[in-house]
Image 1 (cartoon, rainbow, N blue to C red):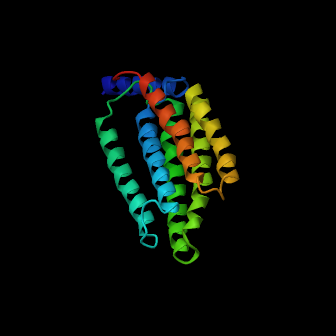
Image 2 (cartoon, one colour):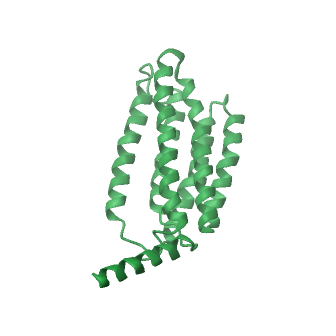
Image 3 (cartoon, rainbow, N blue to C red):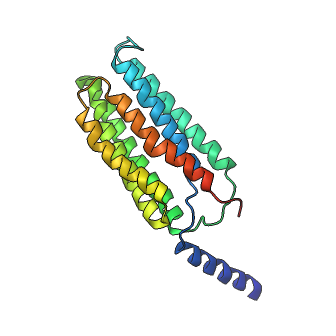
Length: 204
């Protein structure tokens, strides 16, 4: 009984120590995966908006983003299953990362559902509204976790996402706006995710 209590105390002290440490962020593989999918999705959106793919009255958008959702969740599940335990998982940056990305994803999903309903009567141009919101979520998540972990890669990605909000808005009437968005996702999510992945520590 005493030994168990002692082990619990040590575990508590370890978690407490980790929470204040600037441990490396462990979510690079997830950022890279979603960054890749978002870049591909917005590239496909560009092709659909410009009539290069899909001439079926808008069903192509459902195919693009339905496939995005299925592939995204499947990849998320497989990456989570394959990810080993790593030191620093209890740090403030890593704990905040899980919460803020989850909340951000829920917010984006809510808007996607609303926009999909509105698009039935207002046309598919309303999907453009999602892009600035997505970059705002990326900015908040990356800047918060980057500040807590003292991680410049995440901070640069976050401030890049801030710039992308204004840049996409400036291009929102341009036929190539989704290429701008796809490039922004690659630079603010995919590339930082790969760099963070390369810096992750080994198994705990």
